[in-house]
Amino acid sequence: LKIYFKKEIIEIQKLKTESLKEIIPTDATLNEADKAIFYSSWLYSTIRLLTSIPKYQNLEALYKKLLISKNELTTKMEFLLEKKLCIKENGQFTMGPQRTHLEASSPYIKTRQISWRVKGFEKMDNNSSTNLFYTAPMSISQNQFLELRKRINILISELNQNVISEKPDKIACLNIDLFDIFDEA
Image (tube, rainbow, N blue to C red; front, side, top):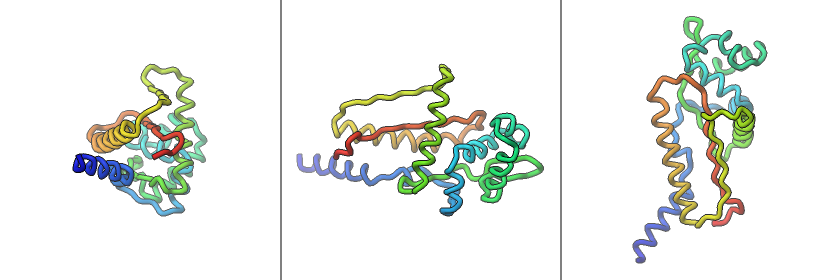
């Protein structure tokens, strides 16, 4: 019984210290000033991701898709090109490194999370059957909470491994929120 509970304690401690940084590969690293810009708006990521889809690899197609001013698009694209998050070859834009990652301790994480969640709130108005929005406040045991956290980490890890195996044809955003309302251990 002691051995069993010792293993359980080790798993719980590992789960508490295991950060997403360790399970999500990162292909590009930005300095602090660049992070402040890149993570300030969902548009930087969206523009970058759109360039992975052949029909959006030029400014006119991006402009028509995003419905933002040409000046704003040009400014954001110049930043992405300068930081090599996008690449321009033969007049076409392509996505640079596959993945960036912002650590949970970053001062920019809240802005990034909020900007994508606001996009999610906007999409809720569309009432599309392909979108999924799920909120589940619950009472749960500590063991169930830790197991759920572990399973979500596995899902995130698998997602990051599998997403690069197929050619993209759309831009999507996955938000998974699981949190202890009162931060109890």
